[in-house]
Amino acid sequence: MTASSNERDERTAAERDADDAGFRRELVAGVRLVDLLVLAAVPAILCAVFALPESIRRSLAFAYTDPTVRTAFTAHYVHLDAGHLAGNVAGYGLLAGVGYALAVLAGYRRFFMVALAAFLLAFPFALSALNLAVPRNAIGFGFSGVNMALAGLLPLLLGVYARERFFPEASVRALPAAFFPLVGWMALLALPVSPGTLDGAGVAGLATAVAGVLLGLLYASSAGVRLRQAVRRGGRATVSNPGDGDLFAVGVALLVGYPIVGFPGDPTGPGSVVNLYVHLLGFCLAFIGPFALLAAGAFEG
Image 1 (tube, rainbow, N blue to C red):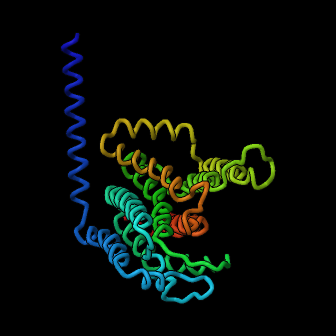
Image 2: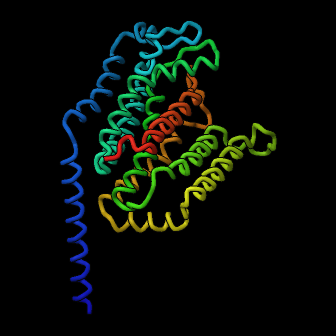
Image 3: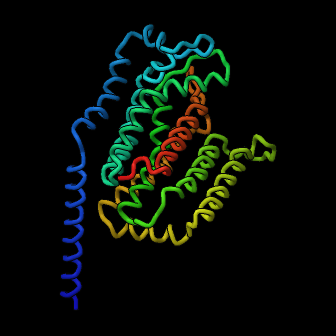
């Protein structure tokens, strides 16, 4: 009896090793050198800009009282201290790396690269322009708005990945059911409940989080998604598919965990303030636009 059990365990381990090897081969086969060069160019550019004298970097930042088209773009590639740069480069590496792997294995590599190009080339102008809606005597700089755009793309990539790898009957049209709770989660992080207060400011984040969850449930119900069944099936698929399931779990953890960095409860730091507004804009715009294209079938096949 024991021998039979051991043999069964050994076969299972061998099967898992074979699945892992197959997963790695498929991922490597789908990766293109030109994509890796594009992905690697971003941190190289950020570091090259940081190597410029501080006076030049400050001239490239976006001054809200004196905005220009040039600085609307360049500000998103400027950092004034090494810690800020390191945090954004690390965040980019995680978001772009996991996102690219999901896209390659889901067969949506072109979708990811087109979205990345839009985030790098068009989003800086859009985010800077929308920032002018909140007038203040300050300068804006840093890559975090683009990073949050990559975070906004992540639920879409997880959705198409799950459909292609686990649940072929799933529809991308149900993905806003994840978007609303995520926005609520960010609001709760940025506006934590104030102990001992019941006023609007003290519970604004909690109220937004609850509203996000309810909207997500309502949307899921209208899209015909049985949430409990979907969660159970997703858990089983993640556990029973080594490689595929591991990558999916990493993507989900990153999707939930990265907002903790992007939406700190106390956004003030030494001589600077985290721009929560631009972070939320980056996330929302990066979800809405690409989702519309996916729902319209622009990248099918």
